[in-house]
Image (cartoon, helix red, strand yellow):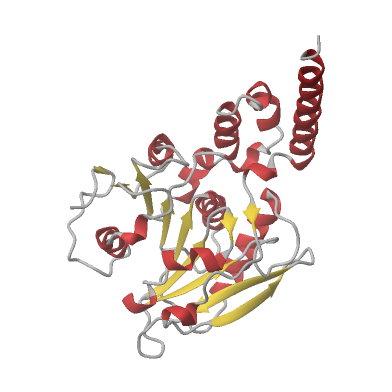
Length: 307
């Protein structure tokens, strides 16, 4: 009998914890599954010998977003284009900057922002807010005089890719100007609901709640349903067979849902580590039309990696 009391107390405590956690998830619409921001500064572009400007943007709903503008290492007004980088769900731009720090040397401007609640941006993160922030950044970018009539690309990694799909689809559908010249998705999930259900299913404490909790996420922004709306803007989907965070099947599903022109780059790195490999960088440059040194398979075919 002496051993029963601790077991009962542990069970009750665990039940209360589970109930509280589920209630928080229900109230937040599962946002805590997608957003893991912090305020730390990990590295700044000058530490990488890059020129940069701090950019602050005001959103229509009263938040202030922080971003970095990295000009191309090219003669004035001679950049090959501009890459709008939407980062993944953890930390902030200072921990993701290495993913695009190589682009200025290749002749591309880079602009990246922190969503609300990340880094130096105000507010608290949620799906609707992050989508609004991504559009705010693109509208600011396309009005810059030094962007001019050069190509504009969206590069989204993981969560940033999911935001980029919705943004690019709406931008194209509304025939916004300037038109996008390409969308690159790296390690992106096929839908907010889909990946939330998978993550909840993988943990025994949340397994019973995977259906009701995933349905608290709005159905309006499922990437797989919006891929076709990006056409005729070219899409490049990058996904690793070793991605331990977003399974490879998500990239395949997005590719199948996309309309032409489209391309699939199969990689072999951990999640978020694509651009550590020079061959994968070159593949993206080829996709953007600025490097012909790497042979790619024809548009619309699966590419089984770059050798």
